[in-house]
Structure formats: structure tokens, C-alpha cells
Image 1 (cartoon, rainbow, N blue to C red):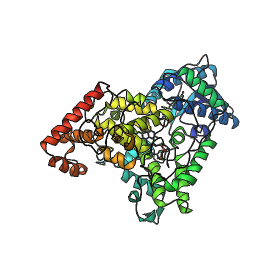
Image 2: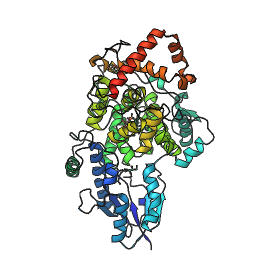
Image 3: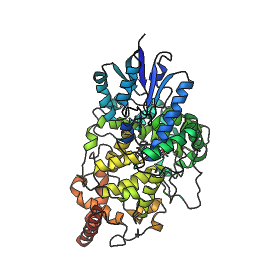
Image 4: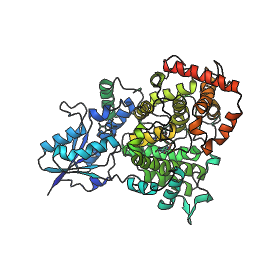
Length: 514
Ligand code: FAD
Ligand code: DLZ
Ligand code: SF4
């Protein structure tokens, strides 16, 4: 009987994967490998490395407990081969009975392209099996996208609700509406105190990984201290359960709120675990839906939360495979500015950016609106080079893999694809940030000032951007109102905005303090 080598990647830590279910426990070998190539193709945040290596080691133990034959390569093994291909090669050489390689399709294009060459490089058949952990397969999305002029998430999401009968009642959306955002997205009053996030003390395995990462990856971005993330399925389930009980009821209402030194708020903090396989999208959606049916969480929160997973998460994954490799090099606004130094240090007088970058540095996490309307908004308004912004987002967040990071960055925040993903650029002046956060109170700039040295830079950068890209944006129906206001501006005001914008951008390009 032909025995197989079955490779499990660091973000495929799921017992129900077909390549595990179909394995012959007696003959097949399951390989997991910590390798330099994956750990350094971007300089991942230290906490992301700890999370993945520790979760991989715990998962390998689970596999052994389940009776699988496991080959595990630790990063520090003297003879570690440094790449997945070379680890596979060595494993085949050491086990002559293994006559084929089986993998689950990876989440990144670069790795899929590489794996498609493995068969000839190894001189052994390599089977790439579909990843069934998503509601929509890559082909399902392609089929949905075929012949459509615009690929809006909202329509995809409605199809998904119908197809999978989620929050549906007699063919209609539960409660009569597809979307309850009118009840969501409130600012969070100062007297609201979100529950503490679920935290775990590092066990022996995690402590070993922490010291490995401290030694081997000391030049990577981010703080390693106070690591408290889940590294096993049981722990990840605890994170999910505590979210459903404690935070889901208020999730919708405060989904867009931002607060000084508080990135966790009423968010779920499960993207780390969904994306590496410790949790499944189906169980998360089912638990949230059940909480509504049980009367434990209101529909505006449950629908809003389910939309993030059944809608956005599924949609961006389909969009990624539909748009690659073009998406990587799209640059609709021809943006070229280098990433400012403070993206790495957080040292800026703009308090909103300082807060969001510091949260990112401490936790390898920032919530959606921090990523979108603060750091993303700034990146677009300042015309930062898409390639550099993409790389930054891919390495700083512990939930980042290109399939989910790139559509969010190139499509959602940078509009680099010219509007395939977003119907208009997500840009705003300082007033949005002021409305949704307490950041402006402690800022070196004044959000109420529109121009001049002390003015909030978002205020004039916003109008400068609209002015500079007038030709490309003016016919967008969703920009009509804003361009009406722009057209009413006096020439003197436009000149001031141009002057302040240019001065700020020059400082930014020179890495001077802003
Ligand atoms: P919650 O706010 O509790 O949301 C629940 C879940 O919904 C998340 O765990 C996530 O799985 C899903 N979700 C929500 N929004 C999105 C979205 N836009 N795309 C895909 N899934 C979504 N998410 C990642 O998982 N990895 C990334 O690399 C990533 N990069 C992003 C980059 C930018 C510029 C932006 C604007 C968003 C990005 N997101 C990314 C989406 C979102 O910010 C994170 O999923 C979310 O902040 C994770 O925290 P949470 O688990 O507490 O999410
Ligand atoms: C992100 C990551 C890191 C840091 N290290 C490893 C590793 O050492 N071994 C491994 O199998 N996977 C790792 N991963 C996850 C892969 O990069 C991920 O599978 C691909 O990017 C595809 O999503
Ligand atoms: Fe950010 Fe402007 Fe508010 Fe300062 S004033 S925190 S720069 S939005």
C-alpha cells in the first residue's frame, strides 16, 4: 500500500482536515516544520511567531495523542533544512516507504505557485487538496464573480446567508432586514467598561518558544512581553465562548469605537485562531446565531458579527484568489511615498496613530477601525506606496496571511485596485476619528482646526487628496456630495489646503517629526 507524507502548515492546525481524516495512521507520516523561509519572508511580529510555533507544537502533540505518526522539525534543530520543500525532501529520503506527498492548498499565492513545482522538484507526486474550512470554495467565488460588473460584498453576503440558511426565516432575513448597522457603530461613553480579554499564562512549551523567538528573531517588529494568547484548540474555544457570553451583546453597538490604550473592547479576538485553524468559521457563526435564538444577544450585534465572518472573511478570501497576482501590484493612485519611520516606532505627535501603532506593537493586534480608519486612512491620504503598506500589514498582525491581508490593504484601505473591492475610498477627516474615539483629547494637534500648524493633519490631508485625485474620483456616484462641497470652496481655501498638505507630506517624506 502506498504511504504518504502529509504536510500540515502552520495555519492548518485543524484535526478535521481531509488530509488528516484520510491518513493511514499506521503508514502515513504527518510533517510539521518550523522553517526559516516561512518565519522570515517578512519579519513577522514576535508575538505572531510565538503564537504559531507554540500552536504548531501543541497541535503536533494532539496528533500524536490521536495516534498519528508525526515528524516535527523545531526551528532550533541543528539539521533544520530551512524551507518546507527541503524538509519534505528530507522526510522522503528518510522514509523510503513514502511515495507521495499530500498537502492542503496554502493560503498564499506565492506558496501555492511554489508547491505546484514540487512534484518535479521532488520527483514524487504531490497532491494539493482543497481547503474545506471556508463556506465558499475558490471556485464558488469565481462562479459568483463571473460576469458581474461589480463585486460588492453585500450581495455576496446575502447569497451566503441564503445558501447556508443563516439568520434566515421562511426565506427572509431574520428580523426583516439584511443589515442592522443603523443600530450599530456608536461611540463608546467613558463609563462603559468592556470585559478583560481572555488571557492564558504561557506553559512550558510556550516559554521555550518565547526564548527561541527572543534569541533568533530579536530584529523582528513588536514586543514579546506579556504573551497571553491561546495556543491550543481548547483555549481558543474558551476565547470564543467568553466572547459569546460577555461581549457579543455589545459587539454591534461599539464595533467602531476606539479608546486610548484599549484595543480589545467588545471585539472577539478570534481572528488569530480562525486563521491558523484552531477555530472554524462554521462553529463561530453557529454559536453566534444560537446566542440570538436563545435570546442571549440582540440581532444587531449577532448579524453584525456574522457579517464579518460569513460576509467579509469569506468574500476577501474569494476576492484574493480571483484577483491574484494583479492585486499585488495594483496602484490606482500611483502612490509612491515611503513608509514613515514612525510606523515602526509609534513616535508621532498624532495621537490616534501613536495609539494604534503602539497597540499593534504591543499586541500584534489592533481592531478593524484602527486598521481601517486611522492607519489605513492615513496611508491612503499620504499616498504611501502600496507594496510597503502591504508588507507592513502582513508582518505586524498575528492574524495576517496574504489571502486576508492583501484584499483589505490593496482593496479596502488603499483603493489600489481602482474600486473592484470598495465602492469608494475609505477616507475621512479628523472629525470621524474624534467622533469614534477619545484620541483627539490628548493630541498635539487640534481636531477643530482645519488648516495651519496646529490643525489636525487629517483635516487638510483629506481635502488635499480629494483635490489631487479630482479627475479619478469626481464621477464616482458615492463621492458626489463631497465633491459638491469641494466645488463650493473658495480658491483661497483650496490654496491653503494645498500648501498645508504639501508641507506635511514633505516633512513625512523626509522623516521629520509630524
Ligand atoms: P472582530 O471585530 O471581532 O470580527 C470578527 C471576525 O470577523 C474577525 O475575527 C475576522 O475573522 C472577521 N473579519 C472582520 N472583518 C474582516 C475583514 N475585513 N476581512 C476579513 N475578515 C474579517 N483580518 C485578518 O484576519 N487578518 C488580516 O491580516 C487582516 N488585515 C486587515 C488589514 C486592514 C487594512 C483592515 C482594514 C482589516 C484587516 N483585517 C484582517 C480585518 C479585521 O481588522 C480583523 O479581522 C479583526 O480586526 C480581527 O480582530 P477580531 O478577531 O477581534 O475581530
Ligand atoms: C506564518 C508562518 C510562520 C511564521 N512560520 C511557519 C513555519 O515555520 N512553518 C509553517 O508550516 N508555516 C508557517 N507559517 C504559516 C505559513 O506562512 C502559511 O501556511 C502560508 O503563508 C500560507 O498561508
Ligand atoms: Fe488624530 Fe487629528 Fe485627532 Fe490628533 S486631532 S488624534 S491627529 S484625528
